[in-house]
Image 1 (cartoon, rainbow over the protein chains, first blue to last red):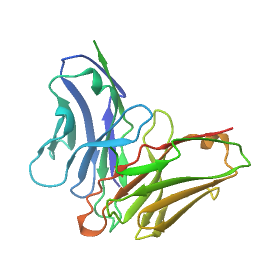
Image 2: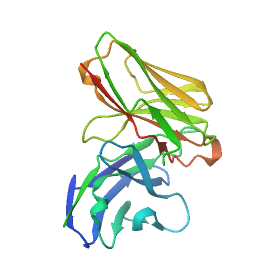
Image 3: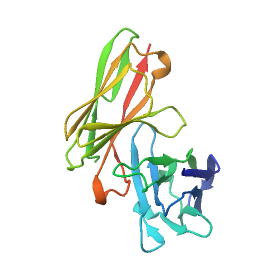
Image 4: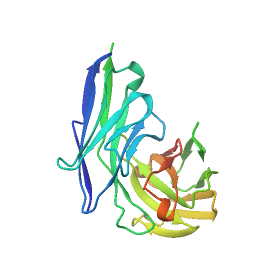
Length: 116
Length: 115
């Protein structure tokens, strides 16, 4: 069974500061990993994903994440926070051993607040 | 702009009402999903349709009835709901088969309030 742990349900940073949102996963097979962002009263939008290949993945809005197999981690970073980054962030893992339908397992989410 | 469109955006219904949530996608995806999301929680999978056939039902109460009329449309019929069913209902779609990486494309959701 796969699982996702997001460390810190709430992260607060100052505008212009580094953003670091932590995600650790467990999976019996090499995973596909995702970060989604959700703004208030909206759906989830894909920030970035890791499937195969380069372990440093760049996404939208200046975010990037690095897949570290040895640490079973997929932390999300952004060098300089902007007020518009305030949102809920979900890390997710896809179990690709499950046949044609892949069940996405979400972490509990991290609420990012950005202070002026 | 999202390519998965959900209607209505907001719905208020009584416990005896019958209503439906609708979802449409035009990305050629052959898998479609319904998720339920309570405040400050991650989305919870309810149903998955693959090639218009129900492939996953996560033990959802029968007062929720999904329907997939064609590859672009997904409905969720609601009947005799309870106040605890109030939530954001998210529709999503994905590719199928060997191109499926598990990436989901979400709509903006339908906010349901049951009185």
